[in-house]
Length: 332
Ligand SMILES: [Zn+2]
Image 1 (cartoon, protein in one colour):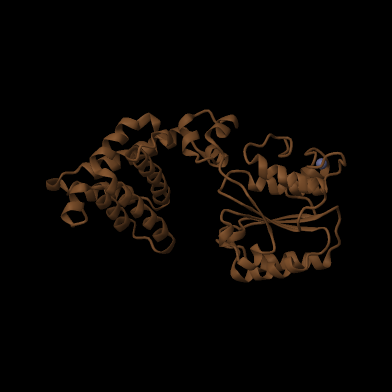
Image 2 (cartoon, helix red, strand yellow):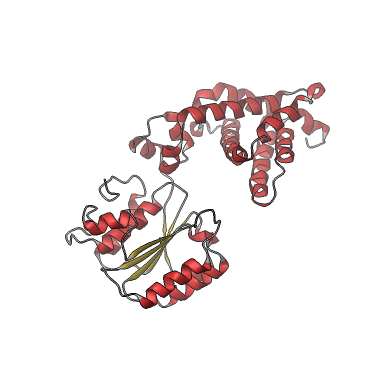
């Protein structure tokens, strides 16, 4: 099944604008598809490449079945290049962009349009971004650059100013359900990302969620005389490096739920099956503690990018959750 023949969920307005531009032959030579992971940006970059090269002339958005459309999806089309991170690299390198530019200069166009998809575009090194800028300034006829990014604001302003930006937004819960995700907890944890929902193992999610809820419960209930249990809870949380970032993200979802319950936004609750437990914690620790927990999680997420003393970060989390320690350290 090709990507074009598969149904697409969400972002109907954005998709319609792109289709109209293609049908009118007025698609810009430099586009940015911006939005969170897993909501269809890459799929649509490939569909644009299909549409511009499709052999079936009566199909303005690509038929999805002709040889050209199939080669686009399998990333073997000679005029469609998909540039991404190489192996374990954390950035797109200048050599990759230089190779792109020498192909532009040396090789003749085989099909109708040449398409370069750069994903994730915000991970280009400064050198790579500046090399790309030169190509964007003088694009050869029939060439399109599609920059796929989770955050358009991380791109150089000089690049942004040369591109048409199309924003993709998270799907509604109803749209995630319509896409065939039938586990309600997975739907609610997806934050509108079908990609994330499809990658989630429901049993693994439940067990992680329950573990973290236990952690919050222990961290928030230890009375002043028994604070010795807290380092133990933090040590469990910090044990595995691989899991820690994921646990911090998942704790963020639980803390958001606490915030919703404290502020009367119950309808937004993600973990509806554990509402009673969440409400107990929320009532016990109060709004100030919940806000402090959220701040601490945000601090941990940024810290994880620089240095990692997981134990210290987990300790900070426990302290933020516990009303007694807050009192002892004068933070209330
Ligand atoms: Zn086709």
